[in-house]
Image (cartoon, rainbow over all chains, first blue to last red; front, top):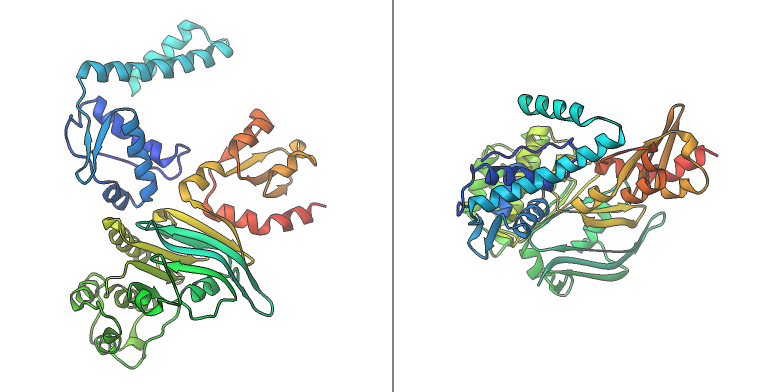
Length: 124
Length: 292
């Protein structure tokens, strides 16, 4: 598992953790039932506040990505792959909708937008 | 018992300085940074907590107990690192240990040896031969050898290089792994140590400016930058401190969303550092005055 924290990013640190763990789960790098580092262990490794990692785990738990059992730690929640994919799709849809809205407000055509999308997809 | 340290309306006056009924609490299992400029009252507060100075008013509870009534028991459970050397300079590190160890019920030679090893301290060297960084590490070794539940440090990082500071960071994170211990440290430089701080208490001129979870502070505060044409008597009130230059202004706000609503897209909002918050709060008035 890889978690990279940027201190200069405008994205709050807890969100950086949430995003990267979600990615790991959605892409299947982290499989259902596998153990996550403890809240305090992760804070220690990343040299960040315990409150930050706690907040990240709480958010992941709320969204159903992980489960925490008192005294046993946190695990990737057991979900079916189809559901995970749907969740991922919903996230993508939401972000695309935002991009479309911005494009429309700037008079960028659908054609231009899809061109940009193709290019970005290739580069990523 | 949720809070390991509770300070309520603590008061102390000197000729030229008053600690103004300050209050804050530190929950068990967390690290709190106590920040503020020189002369803000950090050391006074710590000395009052340790009962090295007599308080004039207020209440201090440690482990849920009055810090004077239960002083002996409490001090057995606290590790304290001073900002200056308080050991016998002529003794070796090993000899000094034999003087200090009997004061603590729960002293552990095993822990002492463990930290001596981690910090690579030379047991047979005299204390006066140690560098500043090594003296701090030795103080910390002594403070940790009776397995304290609360570690209090007064300016532990002043004069230390980044490598030693980073080692200290690891030790502090290690310490709170069991969810039972807490760390309280003061500093006037916002150093790497702030990275691991869960809570920040900011003192200025004998008063607490803010005491909150560090994440909440950094999420809400912002450095707003824009053209000076945006500033008028009304909008200026949104700032804690503001600095104008020939090309625009930079100011600190404690509510980013409010600033965004006020100025819309005419401004840039940056994430502040604790240093920014300290600087703008302390110099806020001076900035304002120089603009009149």
